[in-house]
Length: 381
Figure (spheres, rainbow, N blue to C red):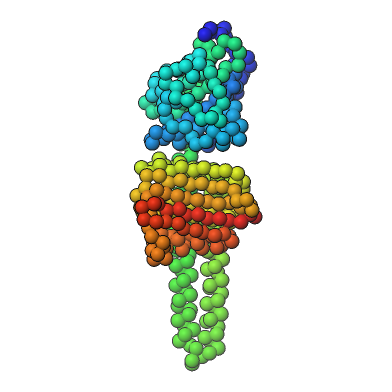
């Protein structure tokens, strides 16, 4: 393998500067990952590029590719595990450059639908001692394969990628805390407002009951006041519910919000939590909120009660339109006759109400020792 000439590559410093600026401006982790991968592939003139963010269970929490179509990616199958060359990139300090990855003794093959790759260049992305991920490039365009200059440029990109990913993580964490604080404030205000209205309603109803026999006209006035107070309370509740709609849902949409929720839970718990989505586009706002709330409740139940090692969240498009949410765990499960008794304890009543409110259908399947599946179907908008 021959090294290319030193000096600015095609596009020069302007191209490098543009790529680094684009990376630094991405505030969402997923956006940052995609920009890093696209920048690396473009600047190093490779056919394929990928970036894997490891989880704590031998797999990847996120794996972003560039140069492969959505159809190809779906055909390849599940996210790769940490093995072979991929694992090596996560556990070594420097770059790895191979003339043909298929001839390396660590190579363990790839799925049938995976594109054929030969020359390879990879490098871990580090923040101090922490490995944030690893960059992989394959099939350099040109006769000489990857060069020393490519290694230097990839090292530069990796340094800035570490900064971009760290900033994106901090931004997302800051936003999560801001949302939590805002929701806590709104919940406190809602509690105070509703408590005051309910107290007034109770006193006015008691007054009407005391007057109904000796002064029916006054009792009627008090009952009219009860109706007015009830209407005010309903208005305040509707306004509060509108405010409490998850901010991330409005800003990012259902799929990104669910993906982020799952990512946070996967990091916070020993159980491996995954999310996959296939063919689902934007849904009406009420349906998106219902799907998110049911997913959150089902995830809470699985993490708290199932004692399972794995929880899978899938969101797919129904043939008749709308979407199907499925939350499945491999935990202890329970027998169907106990579903009714367990309904309130497991939040099933709330989930059914959510489903009914948007014209959907909730299904619960569980048996002792075989885990539990919560499925929500919502119609097309």
